[in-house]
Length: 124
Image 1 (cartoon, rainbow, N blue to C red):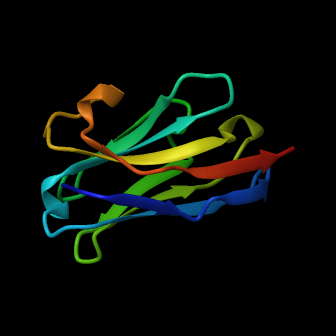
Image 2: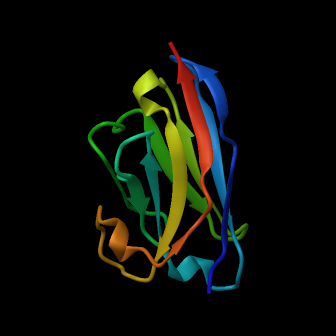
Image 3: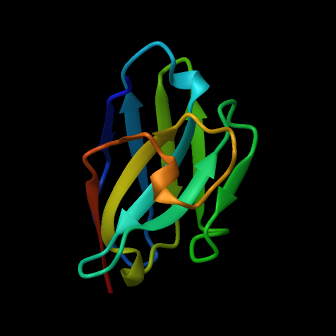
């Protein structure tokens, strides 16, 4: 069992940056692939990015590639989402998720545990 708690959301102007954190409970954090998803009002939840258990490999959605960076600190049981050059279309609730699978996937049904989400609002 893993419990995930996101933080770091807020209001930022277009072009600005935010760093989201996701703190995980439990002693097996390093055994999970971690991912970030987001859901904008009136839209389906969409994949943002994922990284391997060691943090050595990442994969991003085309919409955020080159602007967002996922990292993790297994000693702190925390995964991060650094968001730069933010755009109004990045406005959404952002969720972190943990997966037992070692296979990189954009499907949200492949993730086993979810946080409650944190709101990110980008003003134009």
